[in-house]
Structure formats: structure tokens, C-alpha cells
Length: 338
Ligand code: TXA
Ligand code: MG
Image 1 (cartoon, rainbow, N blue to C red):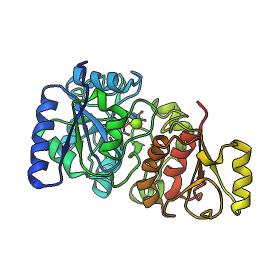
Image 2: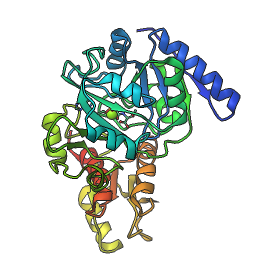
Image 3: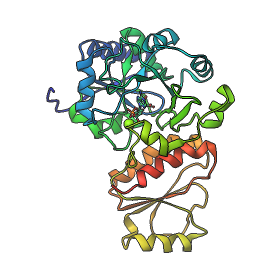
Image 4: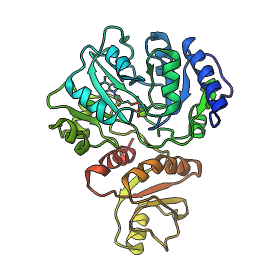
């Protein structure tokens, strides 16, 4: 692996810069290099999905276990179909409803997809992302792009170029800055090789939305997903400080619960969306009480807690509704003890 002291961050905020960044990133990918790129969910570590040694570098850079497969990103239905052995009606309908967008479909892999991408397994996860940069990059390359989230294994996913730089900056040559991720949490992963299809990782495209398109969907959720998808570890998406998910009646109740966990309230960060505390001596951030807005904000809030050296992070529990399930899932994993 080349030693990189500092990565170059490529801006994309004018048409000219966007075009230059596409060309630079495409050239690097053609040479078998790994580049950090924006997607609408989280930033990804991109490599040519058809080049096994380039994909091997992703595992190395992330320190990712070899048994954890990587999502293949495509631009268009033709490319998606070429990655898989069969393209069922359900895939067609879901692609029609949600692509380009934050939904990854697990299907039987085409022989052309190298085994390292699928961790040796018979299936491949395919996604057509909606972020204009990665779409243009895939078109310029002409090959599909393998990309996990651009963070060291099990840590918090990055939603800005700045997060990537802080997490991986000394290990990457190029980081493309495509602005803050619009979705903010990772894609829904849906297994279409089982009947009924099963959500392996919940996302902003939730079960009810999927059911409205294809009917029956397995409600196994996270626990069974853990068995099927080796990447779905119990502890994941974790900030450095311990994180708790709690509800409170009022400020006094919150304070009492925090005092049980820490004597250092000044280093305690509270992330609230409903009952915003006005009178506790902790650092309080307000996140909108709306699942999509919450998803967009949560990782940036947790990254900030890390930067500011939080001693304890208390997140107000989300409502128990389908639209909030992906958020509850990420918080549960972030809160799991190491
Ligand atoms: O939104 C996203 O999906 C982002 C952006 C970059 O596209 N990518 C992402 O990749 O979150 P990663 O590698 O951090 O998480 C992919 C998840 C892992 O839990 C992995 O185990 C699962 O998807 N996965 C990938 N391929 C699979 C397969 N063939 N079968 C089952 N699960 C799979
Ligand atoms: Mg990840």
C-alpha cells in the first residue's frame, strides 16, 4: 500500500471542477487505485469492482474482515443486470420505484463479479446511487464500482469529505468533496434471493415502502440479518464515547438518568428531538423530529461529539414507527457494548 501523508481533496462545486474531479477519480480507478467519493447515503471508498486487486485494497484500507461482502454501484439498469445471474420481476419493480436511490438489492452474482467483492459468496448487493458525482464517475469509467462506507471497519460512517479526511486522510490519495450526504445513513439492504424478500439492513427506504411495491417482505430485521449478512455486527456505527438511548419525562428525570451514568456532566452530550432540555448542565443539540431530517443529521452530530471529546452521548429514543426503524437500528448498534 503506498504511504500517503495527506490526501488531496477535490472540490466539485462548479461544472468545471466537477468535470475535473470526475476525470481525476476515473483515472485513479482505472489504474486500480481507491478513491473516496460522495454518495447520497454516506461517503464511499470506491474501486473498480471488476479488478480483484483494487478491491483487495479496500479491505486493507478499512481493515475490513474478508468475510464481509461489498456493495457494487452501477449507473443504469443494464449495468445492474450484467452484475447478476438473474434479474427477477421484484428487482425490476423495486428499481423502477426506488432507483437511483438508497436501496441495495442482494441477488445471485454474475460470474464476472470477482469473488473478493462478494466475500466468496454466491450473491452480490447492487445499488444505483442517486448522487450525481458517483453516477458520472461510473459512466466515465464504464465499469461498476465496489464501495463500502469510507470509514475504518465498525466506526461511524462519514457524511462529509471532512469526516473522510479525519477518518482515513493519511491513507488515501484522493477524496472527492460532493457536499454533505443528503440521506445521511447507509442504504437499505434487501435480500431478493429468499422468499419472501428480507430486509438485512434497514434504511430510509423502509419496509412499508418496499411492501407497497412488492407485497410480502420478511420482517426478520436486524437479528436475523446478523446471521445472513456478516457485516451487520451487533456493535457498529459507533462513536468513541459510550452512547445511550433513553427517554425522559422532563429535565429532572433526564438529569437523574445522566447522573447514574457519569459524574462529569460537562462532558455529556445530549441529542434531543422531542423533549429538548432547557436546564441541564450538559451540551444539548437539537435534531429535527422527522426521520429523514434526523438521518441526515445524526452522523455529523456523532462525529462532532467525537471531535469535542464527549465523555457520554445520550440520544433521545426515536418513536417506534417504520420510518424510524433504520435510525433505531443504527443507534442500537452504536450503543452496544464493545
Ligand atoms: O449506502 C450504502 O450502502 C453505502 C454507500 C457507500 O453506498 N455503502 C455501505 O457499504 O454502507 P458497507 O460495506 O459499509 O455496508 C454494506 C453492507 C454490509 O453490512 C454488508 O455485509 C452487506 O451490506 N452486504 C454487502 N453485500 C452483501 C451480500 N451479497 N449479501 C448480504 N449482505 C451484503
Ligand atoms: Mg459500513
